[in-house]
Amino acid sequence: MSDRSLQVQDADRPPVRKAVQRLRWFHKSFHDQVAQCAHTTGVSFSVDDKKLTAGFIEWLRAFDAQKPHNADSRRAYVGFAAGLMLRTMIRHNPLTATGLPDSFDAADPAYFWPEGYVYVTFCLNIRAAVLEQDFHEDQRLAPELTDLRSWWSFRENIKNDSSLAIAFLDLFAGEVPNWTMSAVFQSTQVRDALGQNRTGSIESTT
Amino acid sequence: MSSITQIPKGIARDLGLPGRDILRGVRSTLAPAKALLPEPVRLVLRKFDASITPSGVPDSLTPDADFFSGKHEHTAQFAMVAHAALTEVLQLMQRDHLMVSETVLALGLRRAALPSRKHNCASQVAADVAKSIIKHHAVGFVPGTPYGMQQEDLDDTSVAVFTVLLWLLVDRPEPGQHEAALLKLCHDVAATQRADILAAIGAHDNLAALLDSNARLI
View 1 (cartoon, rainbow over the protein chains, first blue to last red):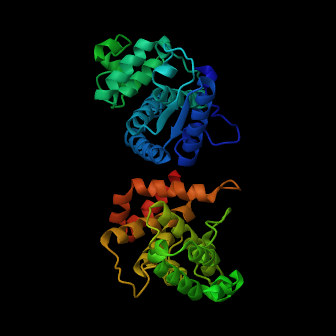
View 2: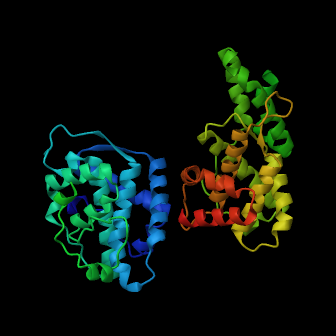
View 3: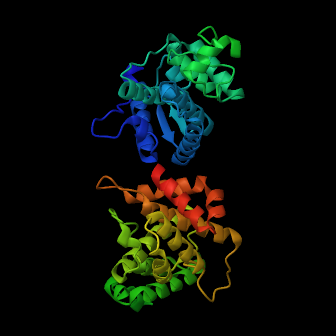
């Protein structure tokens, strides 16, 4: 994943958490991400900018709707907001893979579902940039991110409930997924009180 | 006809806003018959088009508060820029059969500018200007032709005017902003919020708020 990462940090720019709420930054960053993934995988893509814009606006509304006022919840909301972004990307699907390279590893998620792979990479990269800038924290990536079975489950489950994309992004990022109420933000305190831990599995959602 | 093709661009400019609108009206009237004409005549018409059609939105633009002030020198600039932008947006909306009047755009701005001086917020002024442009029918069919504006035409016009005012309101922190790309982005944003725009178009404060919130997110 690291060789396909997005360079979203620049000391002269506003922080990523602010920049990502501007459409021009979002568009440019997504196009950069697509170009990087195309370069490293050999997959060709086309981007529908109208769908990308519609997705951005939907994401921003969803982001504002559940934004917590409590400063203690900011760290948890970074992951949730990235998940919301993945959900809107999947719903609006602005990307189309138009060609695969002559030879590729079919067990690599980047070829199993090229569009989904770009969406996940983009959302994880933004999440990582915010965590590093605002919380001086490195993002931990889980082994599921490169496991084809997880990707198969991911792709199947979101057909019935696109909000599960939020839980799957948590899974890929090594966090505790909320499989039952994925679309509802729960602060760290609430999740601790509910006793949620990483015992849930993706098999339980299939 | 050959004398028409020899009109230099400078003369059309010297005729002023109404002169350019008259020529656009002639072009618009001839447009439906264009496909039936032989190629040499179509070539003449294309040259005629080029003499009155702006080359598109400017490469760089730095609209400030004076842009909406209604002062004479800014009115002409506003009308020229807004005409080019509205023409571009109507093409994006595949509504380029509608004609945009540079004269009415200028009049719309002048009429909106005076009452707008009570506002100190750019989006409030822009909302006044948008309402005035729509009210004075800056976009429509050529007078005297057997066409009338249908509800869909009126709605598309409102969305197009919103798009252009939104584009003018967006901040431009970096020089070298690609104005045509920015205008297309504003068009995509407006397209996703068509229902909200049409609901707000009659209510000044709602329209100003919608312009402001969208300008901030772009």
